[in-house]
Length: 257
Length: 100
Image (cartoon, rainbow over all chains, first blue to last red; front, side, top):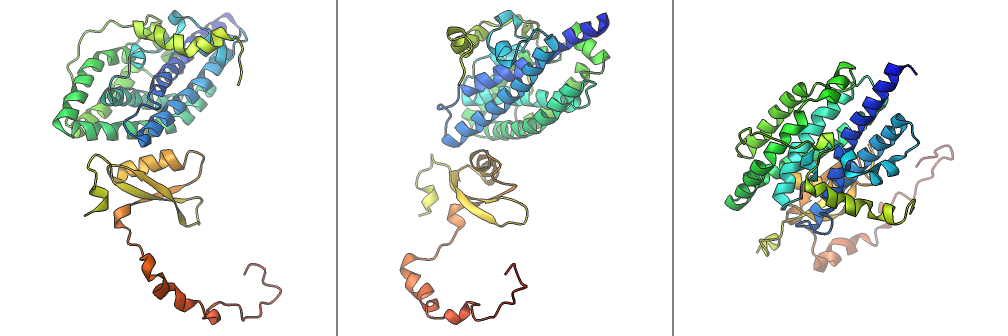
């Protein structure tokens, strides 16, 4: 392999982690709803989405392991990295809040993942394109589920509307990071592996606009933002997630079902 | 009183029908609670098609189903009992016909 090809593989490794860690951390977060959702049917609904996300993470992290070429498998990458090596955006590591807040976060992320995966199906990287083709179908359903709920809650009672509007105000600043293009994003876009984030943002924005209008919610104003989860600089919340998620593998290395 | 409304905190009940494969009928598989028909479809998808059980879902409000009364069973079903000539068992089926 030539020097530049090795370089691309290493960049691609980091990019695939970025996409995969988003699914992994959000899946872990959503899993916290199991046994706690308002009704049994929603318990299953959220668990199903969580499992879809964990499934995406498995494919992506296993692929990242191949790209890295150091013999690490999906489990080692998922369970044995340090906090600073996780490249998920901060939004997905935030606590679930109430059901309404979880739904708001879900709409924001589902719409992002949908626009991203749709474009990744055309990626110059075949493996990434194949994973995206599978994930995009799941994500379409996730967005249907979450946006239906946002419309019900937003266009619901005064109480439900106030709760989701305030969750929207709280979470909105964290969406800036999703579209902030750094060197890695640029490099991947130049190689035709990943889409331009500006393009993803425009499509996302339009989609969110429509859902918010139907839910009679107001789009928050843009505010300055200073979180860099996708560069490995995380909020205090990720540590707690990792402590719980990694406990078993660290206490019993190599444990299997 | 509408039985679905006896507890306002509870979502109404829906009956779920799943078509397992193209060409088959929708079969009743169970029931679930949902606030409206679209949510019922979502819940049915999550509850009853997790293991590829179906390709199509019908949902209907349980209160929209009219059922025969158990007390009327005699009047409704007994008269058919002694009319065995209604079963097509008196025909000679040619050996060549395999799929009847």
